[in-house]
Image (cartoon, rainbow, N blue to C red):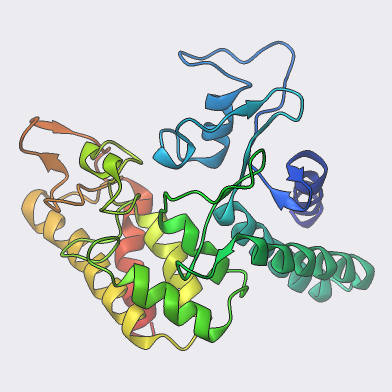
Length: 280
């Protein structure tokens, strides 16, 4: 799979780079994609992120010339640098020294550029409008993904944890981590990526925390993730796609509906985090 993964890695700087910062987008294709929603534009870019209705992208313009959202994405950049680092390791194993050098250089370039998204006042990486230069006030677990890239210093990582991850007004609480900060107006929606808890987000944040000396944060996230999964297993026998961040119950009592598929594979990541934290 290495050659395919390398080709995919090389695609991003050519198609989703806006002056050294990566943005989600939606390229035109022929024939046009068919969907119940608009494609090859704002919704297509949101789909590319995987966070179909995240409030992070509300009212962000889509540039039809560049085929990108006008938003440099801290989460995308963190994931991309991690991808460069991992592929460089694979290239070394395969004896592809020049490609390893190429990947390391590309990872270092975007790791350095992540500094442009650091908000010193807030102690957090923020998404940044590429048309206005304004930092977004909306934060989700993806804003912790620069930890995956080993971009922040230890001191910066400690601020991210203290001021945001363990802040009960944002991501801490009985159930964690909500897909948008608790003090965001969209949190109350509890509709998919507008406040609900998703195993992959918790898992990726946990992997980022493992790059730093942050034992308390790892322990809290691991224990609360596992408890969320197991409480629902005991209640109804299922591991779900996502969970209500207010009640911790996949069924929303006020609406009597389920927002996540049952027995969904990535929900088990909530328990896998605890296994990793316990050294298994």
